[in-house]
Length: 238
Ligand code: SAM
Image (cartoon, rainbow, N blue to C red):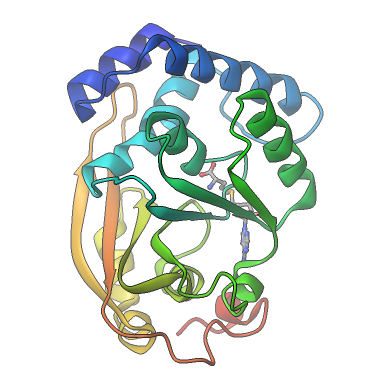
């Protein structure tokens, strides 16, 4: 993995200084990701520079939308192999991170990688967002809910907003067409208690398309009937 590139871009783009231990952790993460990827489909991105930019730096770009504070409760919904949650936890070790993932075999990788990285206090939940969003132990318990590449905005709003406390925020990592996607989610945001704050463009080195961070504030409690049963948000988006 191109650790030098990650270090330089983190500094120049995000004003983040990655110390030696953190650099070693990212290198190990990339190594394990590729090793497990031989056996299960975790990522289509296998080029070392692309892993550094498209997985690690892209995940860390959430820093442009959020000031991370000690004890901040963060949930990454549909985290897959840990993106964007785990890179954020490596760089901001004092956050309380929960990784939510519906696919059991991916949570096996998450169990493995968090152990290898010595991140024993990262919570891994093998569940669907629709179920965990109705569970009193996780509903409205987070300061920040993040997600990348999980669902279109109206569906994602129904996955993310139930996890946030009122006053908390959701950040969706989106591609080129973020603004158009957000327009389609106006109704969902209104129903679920969300309000669009801003859309931040992110230009990543070696990545042609512009990425966007969609920042949503939770301004009112989510009505109890949301999220609806598993599969319904994507079948019948609000
Ligand atoms: N966020 C990761 C990333 O950017 O690399 C993974 C993206 S992958 C395309 C989408 C992931 O979201 C899959 O691992 C899938 O199992 C998970 N997912 C999709 N719908 C979900 C739901 N309703 N609840 C929990 N996880 C879900």
